[in-house]
Length: 416
Image (cartoon, rainbow, N blue to C red):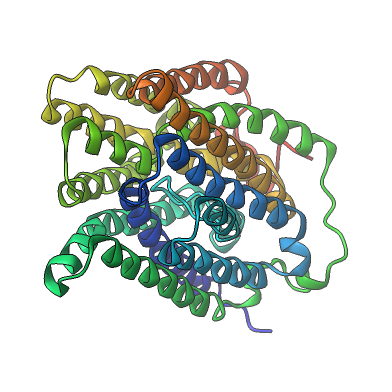
């Protein structure tokens, strides 16, 4: 079977951009739509959490079976299931049924693509580029994801535009947008069908390989780093775009159009930060880049609730977003560097699973704390958890360097 790594990389990037467009859109409008539908803050947080829990379950399946049944097939399956989430919102069933369908459709309210497909992409991309280009390849992939997310956020004004232009009820206009989201998922499915066997773990034979052996050293290191990523994700669960947009909407009365512009700028800053992270990592290392950019971003976030006006709140929030994603390509590259190519699906699956599970927990708790304690509590608790993560990660992994930082041969791995 013919291999097309360059074409496959372009297809993976294109699919990621479109997938992220839908996620960016949902991140802004989901919480507001649920509020307009009459749900409480607690119910909104729980429904967002159910979507993240569905994504976590899909990541479990990906970790255990993607290399066995084929990465291409699994990506097609994931994109088809993702269409269910938009259809569920368009039908607007009762809250319990909606929660189930959101789980099945892996609906992502974070505003940032952290799906099972995203986790699998992290295992695929390093195999489509050379070792020296690993961090840059992942950085460009994340640039396109955030570019798609920014355009999706900018599209948050579509429901009100449709309402005005077509004289529709506001909830009806939202439902049309959700149907469009499901159609977008089907387009992504078509892109995945064009992938070659270069995306598989070991070429054309990977889909029939009976078992992928994972070394004990790999399991140990991946488990340790996944534990720290869980803490970071728990903090992130308090800070999904859907909940933050809802916070701005309630705190300052900002409409969807203005919020769309804010989150468009957020994703543009995120996209630019990925390239800055790849450049910085070459000079100070992957772990240092992860920590020394992420820590100040959390402090900026914790300043947002104390801002005296919307302008100051947005300024602090944008400062945070200019830095917060710089740990993403560096984190992905670091994990890929520690393991063998045949272990990358396992490593990516476990680390992303840990993140998705604790995102779901954080999102569920966020709605409760927002309603029961303080409306700004999620921003403070989420920021505090992320600060703790940065300190613990640096203490534990500052001496465990990837091969390119200790002058080893590119083929060598710490997990052997």
